[in-house]
Image (cartoon, rainbow, N blue to C red; front, side, top):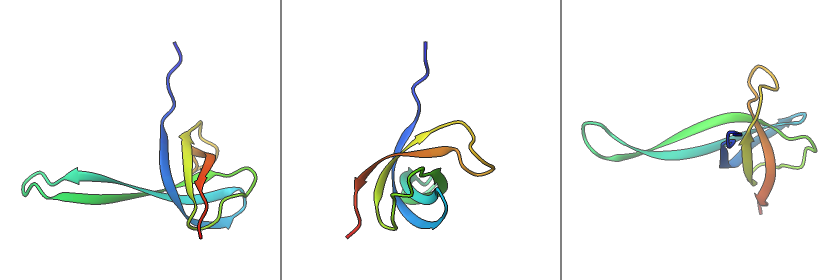
Length: 83
């Protein structure tokens, strides 16, 4: 039985590297003592084979094998272009 790969929707925050973009996603977590919801940001590098992503684009990224020291995600689709 094949394992389902994780996918996330993220926003491109940097596209200065060749075939690599830095994307940021966030999640809400509840504070253990006070109960307030906190927005936590996660930034990671994703592989962009055609260099099609620009800053501000919303993209769908998928988990993949390690492609370099930092890259563990790959851009699957551009959901929305930046204005």
